[in-house]
Length: 159
Image (tube, rainbow, N blue to C red; front, side, top):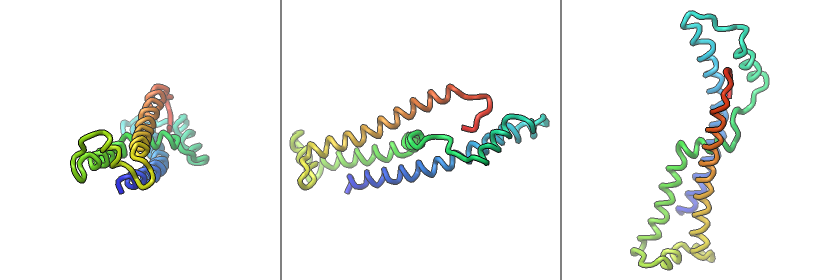
């Protein structure tokens, strides 16, 4: 059951990343209005009705699009929430193998306990390591993309 829980968590991660992409569109629009309309207006300054920000916002409403890719969205949700969930799930699974029904006395016994039906234990253990290692790679790669993207801010941006 713990292995199926891992797959279910991934399904929820994919749902959440899709939801986050929609949220990010509205977050970016609101942030642009906060910084380029409401802020100057509340300070009594000219809020630039002929500025680039309102053209950018209008274009985003006319031709809506996602501001981040699916991969970056998955990476953000993974780093903020799902990495912890997957870590707890992995520790619980490997911990269960190590102590149930009795504590293991050798690596061979640990691997043998991981067997699922006709699948040998070593295949299951390696699949688990690839599964979790893959998500770790996604988190690190997208973090690097985020850091690189953060360095290229335009003066006025909606992304």
